[in-house]
Image 1 (cartoon, rainbow, N blue to C red):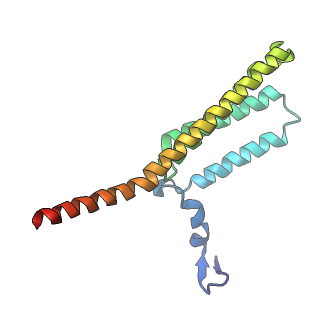
Image 2: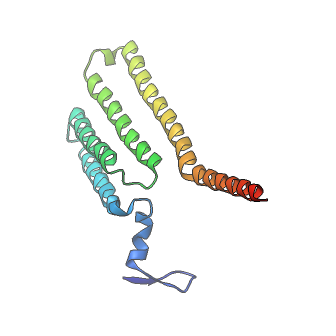
Image 3: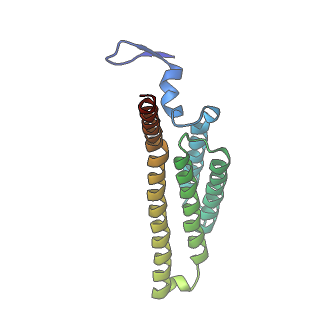
Length: 169
């Protein structure tokens, strides 16, 4: 497969076209994007059948799918940035918690009362707040680890070199 890059006059081959998908993954896990597409396909199958299956069955299937992908992310850590791996795994885990809360409340008498609705809403809000805090911490960690650390290392090397030059004089 070849195509001309618009406005640049270069010819782009198929590996170049798909390179964007692989830029975010480690070299040994270049195939991870296909696993992500498999997950999306499974979710689409579940959502297409949403009216045909009971809610608890759908939630159970989603829990199994997200737990599998949670374990895969933790085991293989395919994304280049470690903070992104952590965030991805945490997203799966929090989604499973929300689905478990939904299954536990399904058909219970607590859900039918005002108090039960407030408690369930509180759980969902708390889980989402936990996600926001985890996302913020992961973002800060990513900025420190991936961006700031190399800059700090260069700065320290520069200071060390300056000290050595001053000591020689």
